[in-house]
Length: 410
Ligand SMILES: [Fe+2]
Picture (cartoon, rainbow, N blue to C red):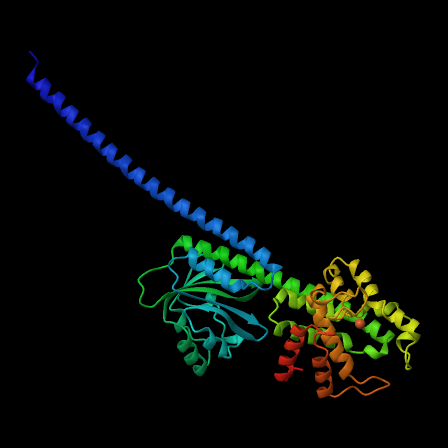
């Protein structure tokens, strides 16, 4: 027979083992839960980083497409990835001013109308309630109550922003200087805080924004440099052809006004402007005796003059940057009715930009005083352009031209 004492001991041992096993099972179950939640949070982080990479790609594309609103994209991304945020804003420092350029929730129009100075700019590093997170992300309690501005300005500022309990602010840096802020805010009544993960995302968004600003500044500088070089060449053309002094810049600016009036995209408007600046560049190859001749040109001289769009086109085709607009220069003397030169293109076959240049070029040529004659009056010039709609000019461009005249822009 089995010893009952021994049995009891055995049973107790099994019970304890069972208990240990159950504890182990519970522990494993908890661990599984933790692992699952870790996995989920990792997955969500991964998704967020994927989204950030997408934003960066978009940023690169945007650098060449000025029609896209970078501020909106970066804010949309921020709100998508940082669920705690209720409101947000982007502000920049420009010379001595501090300007709000984008806002969600806050009253952007009101913020834009307040004459903030650089001196009022709130540097989160100097704010007492700042909780440091990392090198350039700050969490500030009640950012709206931070006083760094004259009373009247502060009153208007408080009216323009929603009350905030907490703000995550990231600096936008440009060439080692603070160029602005990207701020996400939690509303006053809300009982929540920015998570560590959200602040990490914020840091990445700050870097993207800084990179975009730097890129934008660089391309602006590059564009300015190109413009200066082209203007210098234009001035040489103007010395060569005294009749056209200031003409190229006028044509560029009138063409730009026309393009904007026609609702063309920012990218096309830019091309219109550059084409206007260089449209007569081919004249540099025409002898001064022909260009500056005060009397009527002979037929053969006029034939020489008529080469300038093609010469301009050929010169520009050699430039990598200006090749795209060469074709618009080639066709700036075509007529809508097909009787122009050099290729006798007709109607819509003439590139739109060339059709715009033709109107701007004719307007400026007619209205300006020349050495040998006074320019036509504004009324006569307007009348002349209207009469030639559908003949020399595209009627659609003439319509835009008329609207500019009505608005007093021309
Ligand atoms: Fe011309």
